[in-house]
Image 1 (tube, one colour):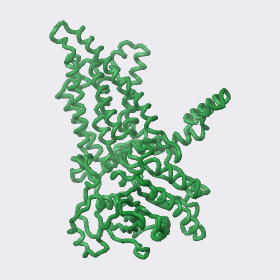
Image 2: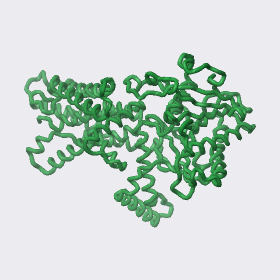
Image 3: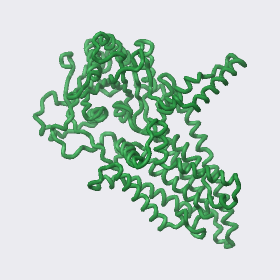
Image 4: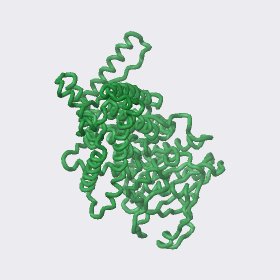
Length: 585
């Protein structure tokens, strides 16, 4: 970098710890936990070089990121380093640059994400403490952190594995934390240049198991037949879609929805979105082995041209990307579903909730009025307070259960995920029994005298679910969408099972059976096992608890709002539906 005329410096950073802390959910991206007892050998080192734009004023910059393991780096990492090096040498000589170029080579010994996050933290929130660095040697001019302008966009390049196709493959990763996505124009620019200029096969992640789904294939064939029939009636009706494209689009849509709902970044680019910087990760899979010298020149040329074209596009911008969408779901590298379309599905899902809640409240008030002759007890405006007390108690329980992992992680000697999950489940069950004992109306096995009218309880439960889903849709829509698919049918179908068993009518028994099935599927651990099965990773037996704990650890380590939704919205509403199911009606 120095030989190319760039300003070069090194950045030493501590590896970041994954320790769960409840307050870190609401903290900024620059607040992270350092591992204890760090030594000089555990420091990571990032290398950065800056090219000052000859036609710029130093107020904006573009970042190129290349993860590289300085000790155990393989041939593919060396290829990504070579592509970026050839491009960087070109950019150091051009005269059309109006934005500074920063080439960041991150120390991937500690993962791809943490080195980028550490560099961004220092870039935006400088620290003036040098005591830790002084312990590991004297500072020199290369250790002085240098900065350029505001980061306009960032590209992360990785060469990983050999392509399974006959052409070089480019995979685009765009999902950041809590469902954040870069501006769609950045993906469109990269996709257009890769396909139409450099001949790459561009793909995004798919749920592979759905590609072989027979029922999904039947639905696609039905849509294809309907489209053909419509074109025979009117040639201008061209809304049909081939069954193969429907399968590909559905698998890609499911992957995009799941990745956004998970709230975990799919690459180092996620660190940039925490600072509102548009960034994506480009993973190139060449069709030749890494030691093939005959194809490396062509591969370097095409890869560097793709990055150069993208940088030229961003360089020509007078302002940040803002014209296209920030809220969308991908169905292919060139097709998407915008927020104006997918919000309709969510609105239709949650729209019945307030109407059903109002209807149930009126019905419950009428039932209470008939059951008592005391006029003082017929104050309808206060009859929901008993049910609200139960709903509040179980939501408070959900809040405590959400914080339990922080205290469980402090217990010495409990490092196994299976042991921690058992301790968490046992403690949560004990707290639930205590809640039932303190507030008898909360228990599904309480007597009719102490129990609240089930219609009023269901009304308040549905209202709480409606508020929780609407709030979650603002934070992470994908989580709210999947949560609504599970929670809305469960809340609407929940009804006492005892009257159905007494009546023995087929309609009542079928409704009770559906309620039990939905409650079983809606239990977080059970839904986790089902989703693992859909992704081709079946988990059964005693390992399920450990796998679920590990999954939750990944959610809180990345500060995913999905973890808060599960503990503070979904679990309390599920428990309330369970109380309604076994209500002593």
